[in-house]
Image (cartoon, rainbow, N blue to C red):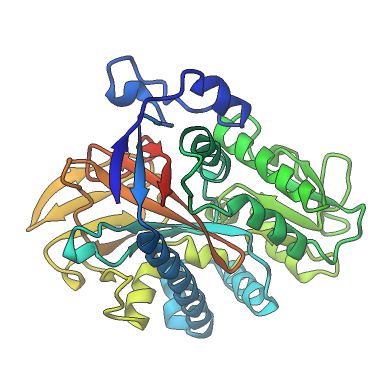
Length: 395
């Protein structure tokens, strides 16, 4: 796992924008690290085939552990209590699990550094199981970078093909003309482009996929079902919008009702993913599988994990409101809008490489298996929404 410098392609901006990555810059001023870029192809991470095999195996293992953890939570009220669900959503999640509602994709964040003994095995930091982004960069843009720059190399990346195959599985029982609705906010560029890409993959799978701005989703109270702007019922609905936000809104109160009626709505990601996207799942995993080589100690108190810990709000996103403590001293903290909620504690590991860059790997799951890899790095010890994305390859 080496960081190799490259010369950016002369026309890289035009190339990646044509591939859907129009949000490649963070809007930072010139002179900032990487000139404020989100996509950074001035370097790439080179892996060996053995390292890729290890990451793929760890991802598959972690996904199966997470499914076992969900099964334990829905069967154990004291574990379910950790997730703070309302009675209606508690029942909704449990029913969704027992129905086997299908999932599309997710992304593990992993700490891995084969040069450090404590990270010789990939360690799960969290599971972005509900609304993961960096999808276009991972599935499309870094693949075309590889074809342009290193055509004789390979990449851990079957995300695009796996998404198409998974859409076929999810939509196989739908009437051929039934619309499949995919929603996001229309004015948030990264989410909009991500959903546009997912619409394309669903269409390639033969589905009648359409983008429906989430503000245009309606509730027909007479027929107790959700409808689009043309009053067509929603049968299969993908929403790039967090479950916990939906559950807190008046709109979201109708979802458990729709799930129990004859006009049942299948939501992707399914309600049971609320458990995996909630960081209390880290504590459940450690309770169920203590000492597992791909897990880090996690608990509801700092004392449960040792003197070096990281405190994470249970429903924060993009590295917001994180506290990193080593030996009783706080060494880093991030801001954000999640500072008032409960937190979980996880054993802190050092993400720094010899060159001082801190790296987190994103390991993608599509359907039931590992599908690809992405790399994020930062000068600081906490990876956030402003950390850079670099391509990867292996030989």
